[in-house]
Image (cartoon, rainbow, N blue to C red; front, side, top):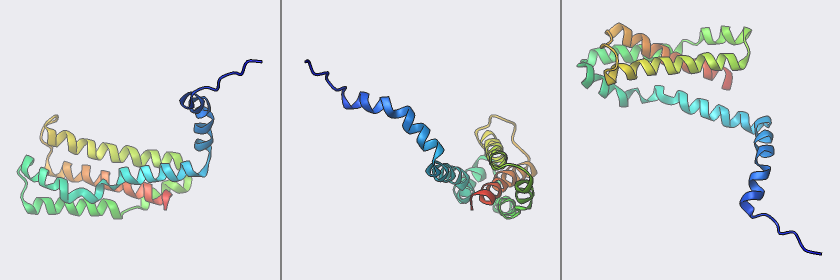
Length: 145
């Protein structure tokens, strides 16, 4: 009887890949991984000191204006009452979706302003964008902590 050759290791691994992916998606370790990814994406709030220099040079802001933006960043990060109220009545995935959308919108608008793709935003608009982006962190922290 002729012996059937075994497939190379790379083929054998890819044959079991869909089963492994399904197993990981259903396990609690996927929740840990997803939580870490969400937290990593929400960690941009701590980089304000890094990108505030770019705001200062691009828009010609003085230090007092940056202090106001920093205040609104801190205000957004510390007011989490809306996240808690929404989390009481909505499912977890929806609250995370709100947080992700707020994070994307806030930082995307700041990025559009810095790169000149939109008209230079007024100072109050930049404060609102930074507040929204920073407030998204409370949505993530409400559910993941």
